[in-house]
Image (cartoon, rainbow, N blue to C red; front, side):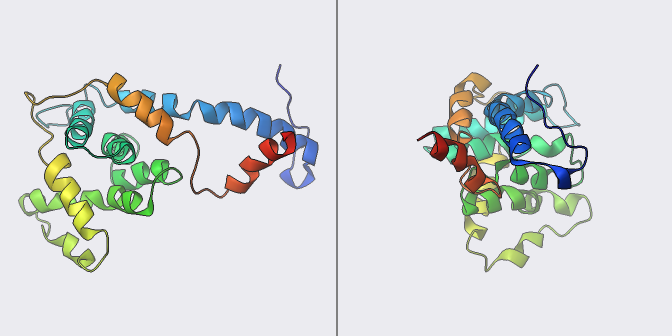
Amino acid sequence: MNARAQFVRMEDSTREDWQAIGGEFMQFAQGLPERVMAHLKILEGDYGGFPVDRYTHSLQTATRALRDGRDEEYVVCALLHDIGDTLGSFNHPDIAAAILQPFVSEANHWMVKHHGIFQGHYFFHHIGLDRDLRDQFRAHPHYERTAEFCALYDNPAFDPRAETLPISEFAPMLRRVMAQPRQSLYKDALKQPAEAAA
């Protein structure tokens, strides 16, 4: 059995407790890419009325970005942009953005977080919404990046006949992007065990 903390109230925890928790966390964190891919796989077979299932749409969006020469971080964002569909039916971009935030640039995070409003340009007018809702962000530095993401990769990725690479093509990229957080509340704490060992 793995070491476990002894407290029943967090305010009574000790450094030794947190060393045990930290050791468990590091092992758990290493499995994040596999858990993310397993959750993405839940989208397989979920058509929701669309021409392709949500899993295929995700793979196809990433395929288009990869074939267009985008870097790995961007391709991973394309792959995961709709991963929140199952848990965040009314705010799926927020879910994807939260998963990616520790590992990606501010520009890519903003793009994923706002892609739903930008993608709306292509269909909002059919459901009684303002298709130009994205214009509220016209002055934002990442407006063009997000509009381009939707135009080139998200919008056209509903084609049952289009090239759609398998998840195995993207798994190594996902593992590399998620190997080390770039920004996180816990970033400094994660350095301590490595520094102590040095």
